Image (cartoon, rainbow, N blue to C red):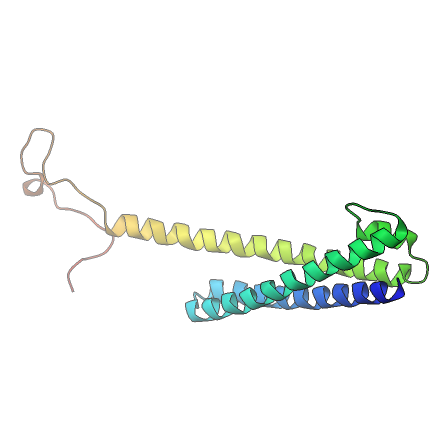
Length: 162
């Protein structure tokens, strides 16, 4: 069981490191969104994909390790890290600290991702409003069937001629 505990600790440390990297990338992403830097956003998204793949692999390893520990502790299904901490004697402090750090990092990441999402939605709304104003369709004919352009001039936000 000692070897499984060491592997679990290693997995949790790796996950915490990778989530910290995601947190740094999310901060860079926020700045790129504010500055409308599409190239940087694309680069960050590619980096995030790589980290997500690594996190997925580590998570699978962590689950297998937790299941082996659970069997050794007599907990067969759906073992949680909290249950392992409660039964672990010599590694409880280390595991508790890792769980706390990991929870704080993920919480910060969720908060920053929410901010980024709001910023992106605001940018998209602004673009949609500009598009609607630029391409405002003004019908050529009125309800009486006569040409409206003779009476009024179309007013758009931008001049279409250059």
